[in-house]
Length: 273
Ligand SMILES: [Zn+2]
Image (cartoon, rainbow, N blue to C red; front, side, top):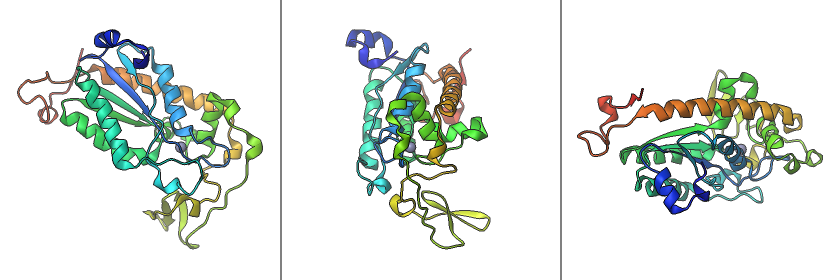
């Protein structure tokens, strides 16, 4: 069920202890030569749309803005910053917790949001709730090794082609030049390099790592809608099954002794039926 189409009287019946709230979050940020700036929120928004009929699930409008300071050298990128993003997510959760909601799923499309979402999840927990954080692009290759990601590369571009084919124009393609720090330090992602057998974090402006903004395992030129459709279906199916399990978790009663901050440490989160 979508929250934004309800009246407040309908919402009064829909929010509450048994509701699980799904918040899609993303970023407005460069996604290489082919990916639209909205890639990171469009994909979680579409997964959420497909899950909206799940009983007991309340789907919120997507939060399109996120944390992406390293991408600002590319025009069109909007970074609202770590603190603002965390505050928005926490305040969304607290607004709904005021009326009884205790379970949240933050469905995330962007790596820069991961740390503040963890902090928001802890804030929910410390207020007597529980939050799950799903980074869809890193979940995908766990479900199928051929669904491996990158940034603005085959995975994301393919899923965008499956959702909004008219938003991806392959005639706009140009190749990326990947700028290595030395012959022994080769970039494995936007902020990591391989040295021998290990991977080290070295953070640079994204534009100094990849001139197109895209970073593989593959090239966005290889993106196709069929691959995107397959990933979208597989990830959505997994998340649906996860949500069913998440909904079965029984939280300690509100106000019960030891039921809030310390509830979990006492092993009080047990499956319901
Ligand atoms: Zn992305």
